[in-house]
Image 1 (spheres, helix red, strand yellow):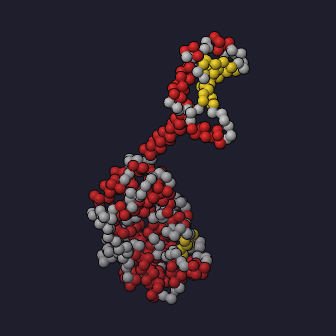
Image 2 (cartoon, helix red, strand yellow; image 1 turned 90 degrees about the horizontal axis):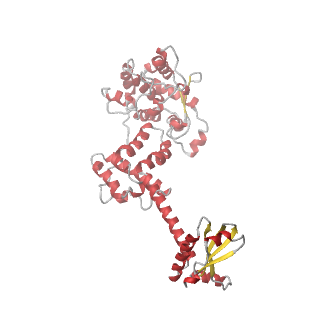
Image 3 (cartoon, one colour; image 1 turned 60 degrees about the vertical axis):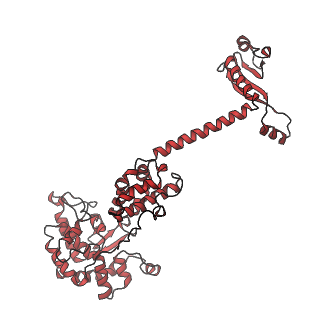
Length: 429
């Protein structure tokens, strides 16, 4: 057997002319492609049942196979003999070396994919998914900056213990560890945090970043945590009979409070606090006496036009007079806010509420409740159509009403708003 192997020498291999085929024995072949250049191959009879079946199905009786072992001189004679010996050892165990090579390649690919997936899972932390993927898709839904801040706080503060954890490894117990300490003391915060975390995992599941059941779904905790109590959602509204008294007190505060000035603007326009806080001079058209609020700042995501009454125009004059730019001898630019601090920043979300809190007899009411005050007055003390009232409040109208209000009827609303200003007291003009 020893004589049947290792028939070639390096000199013979180097000297073989192009097209020459040489055998080293034991199935190892060399085919010269040029002087000192060639290809190694290992020829064998396949013991693989699967390969044999394929050959039979193809109508071929041949079960001979040839396996490439590399090119010469990159693969030397000695290295080729080693590869051939390894292949013969596999054949001694009834293993086809080509099929074994395929299996090993497949295992290598699977291993590489697994390692890539594990690395990706490790890199995709809860915090990264929240900051880079979920929040950019969710936050544009909100026109109220407070809602934006609350969503950010959930993932940056309330769920801080999860931020550095691989998203794919987070389980129900991890979410519970975040919720349990605050569930009884801060029920509303904890409940909303759970809902937002649930939404994150629902998003991740749909996008292939998390496998399995949602670890923040309420069904994961309904036997562990007490059901959150439903908090009544209402904004106490000043009775319309008291609105004149309210504004009389409010105007006494306006000499040194821009917040009080903005609060009257909210009252007379029946707008939301956020709409007033971020109103810019570019939205004001004094020639037509209109305030045009862009859709991106509206709750219903549609443009809204508010007629500017005489008293509202006077408020604008005062707001402009107090604007920091005026002290510099300049006028506010269209992009600058109407109601601002000394640093030309928009007033805080709590500014108007704090003004109300300090008003004797009105401390329990809210700025948002003033919209209900206007609606109560318009619905019970006037004959204006319901659709005009709802349009002023920028509420979503029904299909029939939408057809009726095909165009924003701000001029039809103007008499109603002037009448509302009159009702709010003689100084409202």
